[in-house]
Length: 253
Length: 253
Image (tube, rainbow over all chains, first blue to last red; front, side):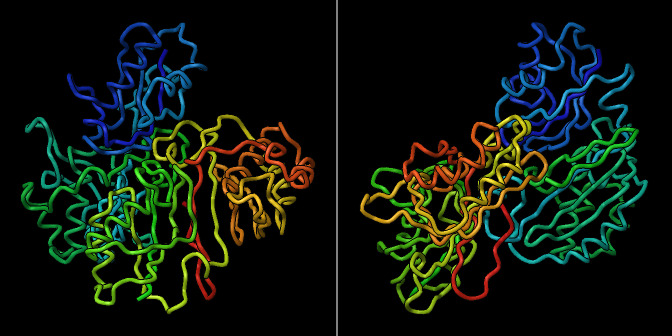
């Protein structure tokens, strides 16, 4: 049968989501737990291969060929018992044939968080600490130039240089909550390090080192060096993966 | 001069707030940082001596005899640089003579958090994980019996058995936010383990092991064994200390 897992994780202890030999990864920990439950290795798919140190509250994984004799009702508890506290599985669902965690997803939403306040012990692990006072209006103006169907080569990498870097950025919002500034990015898909490059560029604008008017030229350059730096991974969180049908996005992290 | 520090901490690595020889405590870490800045030991006071493992987002400490040549404007940054990420100082203020972190405080507010959902990696450190579905209405009814001026001997300890265990519990509220149930307790002061005993008792009511109607007899017994168990420390957070004058309580943890 075809299973869907909804997963939250603190990215700090992991070398990213995707399994890598000799490294601790979220997928590796999940696959090890599954293998102990099932008695053999099972293939997994996922909606967003987050980088080392990036968090998730809305990651979605698939197990396309889960054994039919698996007791789904017990799987949630078993996975949460076997996984470290850094990983929590929020639900296990049986999906129709053909549903695929990656290929069925129509959008991914990430939130990047920056904290301008003091080093709050409950926030330093999930926000980029940047003392100062950024111009959120300028960041929002810059964000407006980035929304839409663009070649994002200036804002990330594609592993295969012949592949397209065109993505559809549906939404790029910036807002302030007290000392915390959040950047929400929703797209059909992202190229590598794209959200963190967008965040790093918007921060450069917020600090006055770049102008919102520079952004169209950054996009047009199709050259990584044209845009701002890559923001650190621990401020980033995958919050929602959208599939066709009625679903409500969760609140921010 | 007389200084006030506002402090947040993750209680997990500490044997409580108050300094103890040979133990890592919040006050010990703060005092060590202060001694490095000032060049000598300085006395500190505090509004609430939280137990081992208990968190704070609104602890208040005082330095009644801070050296007059201390540059207050730099102290905030210096303390945050020297303290571990588990402690964050949110502000340093010069107070009038006679202000005292403990004796000037008119109320302390704690929030106890219980999570009935899956083990969420960003909540397991600050909530008591209790799968199930508690009766929040029954908990609120029980809480109503506890509000007021009472001898709370059944709900905690006083180090000196001849001292009074009478405290004025101004507010005891219970509410649900998704899978998280929060208990807010505001009193002039609390006896040892009082908030955690109130929380443990309300949980026993929420799970149907005790009735709201049992609560008046628990109070009247003045015997620790009459009430419910002590809830674990990591679900508890000191969120606000009130001083005379206009102050706004912060949002919950």
